[in-house]
Amino acid sequence: MRNEAGNSVILILIGIFVIGVFLLLAVFGTDIGERFGLLSQKKTEQQAEARGKPTQTLATLDVTPNPVIAGGNLTIIGSGFKPSQWIYFSTTCYGSFNVAVDSAGNTSFTRPAPIGAGVCTFDAYQYSGSRNNKLVLMATLTFEVVEQ
Image 1 (cartoon, rainbow, N blue to C red):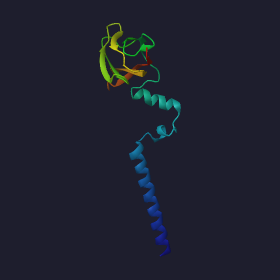
Image 2: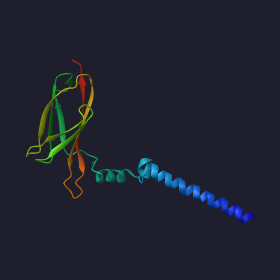
Image 3: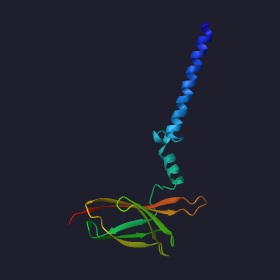
Image 4: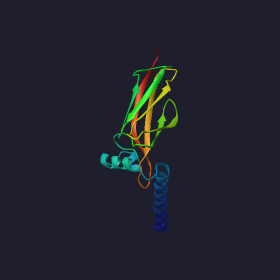
């Protein structure tokens, strides 16, 4: 009788352990090691590149004037992009939009500056062109908007 009770307790503990592991996977996915810093930096960088987020930018963006004056106009100038393709911008001040790239890999556009002071970030993405054709972060620009 005592041996059967001991076996039941062991089975219950194993069941609780299995359920705990299942819940961890359900909540954190299969990248638990990455989330808790258990993977090496090199492996994390390789995974980031595989997801279309390179560890270094591939193109450049600049803003004029700098600093940007609230309520005025700003011009974004970019180079080093894939020629004759679209750039998908995700921004903190304007939402998301697309801009064309010329045959030399350059782009430029003008927009009204935000009305109030603050910080704006522009993330520029283009499709990888590979078999899976994911969006790849090509450049990031962060600038400050100041009151005149």
